Length: 408
Figure 1 (cartoon, rainbow, N blue to C red):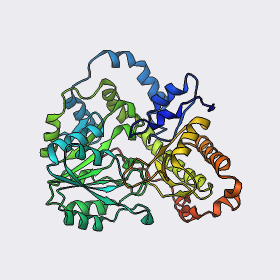
Figure 2: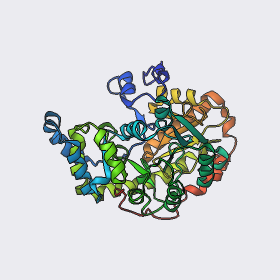
Figure 3: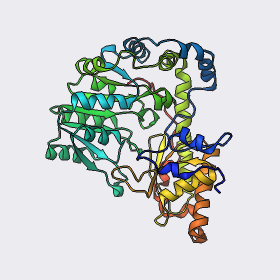
Figure 4: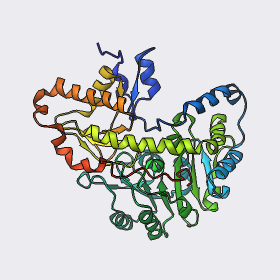
């Protein structure tokens, strides 16, 4: 019997990853699940912030929240945004749904692999989805000029990019994204999904939010749940010119945000320094985790500016079997990417976590290799493996540069 007592059949139900709660219930009381699957900020909110939320939990759960317009106005004030350029929703996926229903008329272009709702949602409503395949040989990096050429050839009417992209963690410089928006000013819509951009330390001000709101057809998406480590609250927002923002906002339910989301919005401005520190610590952990993953023989670790890594497993490994083994024998929840368009089960996305958890992950992966592949994989020095070519990406060459990342 598996040491955690988890029935791994739960991992094979449905097209999406099993939820943390599904696994926790399957494991039973007292079992510890280490989550390398859901991209979350492990340093925010702080314990003191959770204590504050706990003290007010009774009133938060007992009373109605303010209407969405009031909460949105407060968020805009906190982030120094014009309220008429903001629409706030019950998670960024709700915004993707309404954008598709209201603004995508016939076709949408999207690089793959990427966040699945950008392909699944328009396909569900009968739109043509033009998929631009990113290449493994290029580290899944998106060439914007080639993508624009593809959009023109396919005559796509809506173009989407995710920056930072999920699952590969690639980042596009702000100046290049602005140029991309301007090249496609004749399209119905250009969407930049910045759900993970706060975790990037490549530029001081990486977001194109301020640039989108002065353009006729641009939208920028943000995910507060991802940024603040509070996926369970389900809150996100979009930025665009007032005409687009109001069209979306008018269709959203009047009370689509809950009281917990309202409370957190009011807490943000009092904890900006803690948030900045959380990003600094996560940036440090990303560099450290990248180096540790390099120690696994034959594992390819792709450079990342997100709070996760994309890795390619050795040829003789099975991503599905490794995922199941890590859950059953080490209590580690991972994301294998076999159900992502443009990927196979040889790829995994691993969330950035602190050193003790990373040690547990590496031990589990080496344990899997030893049990199922024999000792031959250890014949060479792990640090001299084929994945060594990415090592320079994780050398600690510069200090994290803080920025007002919460601003658009």
